[in-house]
Image (tube, rainbow, N blue to C red):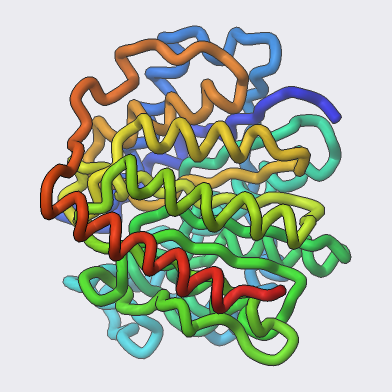
Length: 356
């Protein structure tokens, strides 16, 4: 397999606007691209800039109900109507906006291009920062997500007979991907996230472990608020490598939302670039073809620096100090004890619920 690393990019991926005051700002991706360009990343021998394409209707319907897709098409043309039954609301998390269907087709197609390049062996890994929209359900938009591109990628890979390990390190539970594969063992979903007791979508507890053939193949590590680098790295290392090794997938799919960062305004985790480097290095150390996507991230500088760093890791390139957090938060005293205890409990519960 090639050692190359793809980066899916077109300025159109960063051009749509949910609402002027909306926290998800697709233009944040320009900062990632421009930082990498300034650092010479795309001139590296293994770098591959990949052009996205539109997803097809059939690809979208691998996960989404045709009636839902019809509603999104209508909302895209006439966003002023009432689409609340489909999870869209003007002043809600996921507002209808002009051109939303077309923007979502391109975002999803970008993840599918990443998948195709990886599965063909033309690249070892490919990253679509515009993707990772993991909350969308079969018949409902949710949590800023319209079409669930990670679930679509995992579903198409499963349809080709591949075993997929999906690892979600966004601060929010990957509920839409979990729901799509809750009753199958062909896609192992592992989500490390802030507990649903304190954060949207209020799900992702260890007892959500799958059903039927999927029992034990939905894994949830529900972390306490204020989890820092030390606790997170320990939780990741205890849960993810042994489960993935036991499952032996054909392909690795990751959702790399950076709303876990200590500067993020919407969440309560306290991670820095250093914990993320540890995790993404592990992804890169595995023998599996790797499809990587973005996700949440609402502090624009944290997004810019972290995803730039993560693509450099995919390339095997050095990390400039300017991309790292210089003074990440570190718990001490009773706060340290409390978070460590709750984190260890979350890991124990997740592993106890896992397939054997």
